[in-house]
Length: 221
Image 1 (cartoon, rainbow, N blue to C red):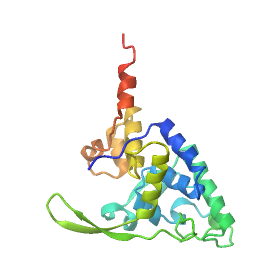
Image 2: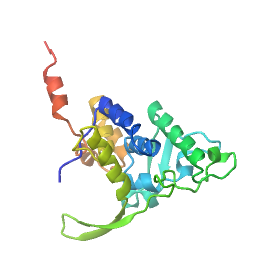
Image 3: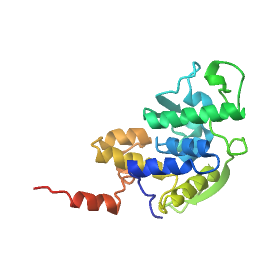
């Protein structure tokens, strides 16, 4: 199975702008932003409002993902320090309030129900999960739960941008690749992605042909 492309910062910005032309743009932009903060698509679907917001309404800089929503039931922390991502998340919160999706009528958590799912479908309902079967390298079949709807939505967004090899996993690949290219130690990236070993993280490092061409065209002498 081929790996999902890693996007450059310019491509990520183009994807976010393309979302503005689509139905349910606020939800799509929020899902893309969370994806590029290293969340898996099922984690995005299961994320709760209280995971993202403090009771005083401030968006958390660090989001602790509980084991129950993480792959292999392994909890981890992701960081939301990117200004663009935080602005997009706030736009989504305001959209929820306007639509009255999961609102409490209280001041805490910006008026949202803390136990509510953070993202909603275009119909104002939480995303649902479906059982999937995967065959491991050992030959063993394993059943797991996944959320197809935001995965398909992200693929459609990327296709509209001409990024036909991109998927919901491109967020994690992009974060890894862009961080390493900018000199972040692979051990640090492994921690962000929730990998036990940096050797696993190396597989998330994807260099596109356009990056190679750009590097080769530099005047080194």
